[in-house]
Image (spheres, helix red, strand yellow):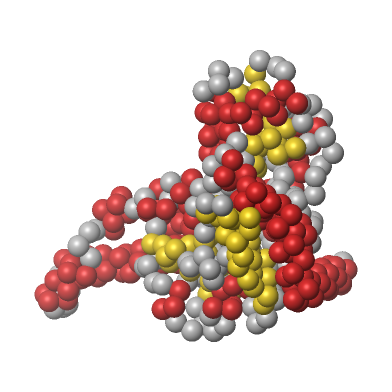
Length: 384
């Protein structure tokens, strides 16, 4: 094993933050870590929805290939992006302690999901979140949104900030007209001052860097809200800067592995070093249950499936929710699995769900996805 470990990661801010936590933990074991940024297929096709970027692993495969080709010693991923199928000569060497696993609603003004007006537009790039939103609020419009966490937040904030900037400019121009001695009433000038206590420049200076970036962003869709992973917001240091509502986990069941990081490696010595430094036993059990159920159901990235497990004493409390893409049908259940036989009981739980209709929902989702891809291909041929 080399003295300096080469760590492959995506170049997004969130990915680099996750890589930094791995490097810090290994540094505590007196191991030097060199971070290597790698562009993945998911990064190369920014306008495609995640579930259309191949069946699974759009953000994973390129990093793992660095490891398998010997150009890196380990790679760091969001565990929910890692395919459940084992790759040859590659293992998940460590799953560090998981961050918050749930989803949050983000709005410009703190509006809760139940208080969004009918017809409001909610952005997400997830089939699971889309179905869960529609199941809870079929009167809402759900539109795709892509990009890293910062980009998505900027897309949400941009229209409101740009509109406010325009209003302030108009009020400022009106103030100048009054000052230059027109026939405007003196009270109008006072009203403008009362409406905006800060000048345009003072207001702009008071904005955060994220808000200033949003001011410059052109958006095709105006979102009233976004649904995002709480862990991503916290790791990006954005959680306390935004108006958020934590969504109920029993209704918005997270994706398998959500909130957890996976470190993959192939060299046995590297695997052992990483496991000792980073692996968190409880998180390993919980995510193994989730990924076992996902693997047994065979949903991958083409079906809306939420799976969440939590170790509670001698049991692993496990919730599963499988939905149709429009959120109108579902098979859902919770079960306490024996912590000593969690893997076999997770398989049995998945088989029971499949027999109760989950298999049919997943097959239908796969058919709908295949038809959508065919429609896109036909449209592309017509354009040519």
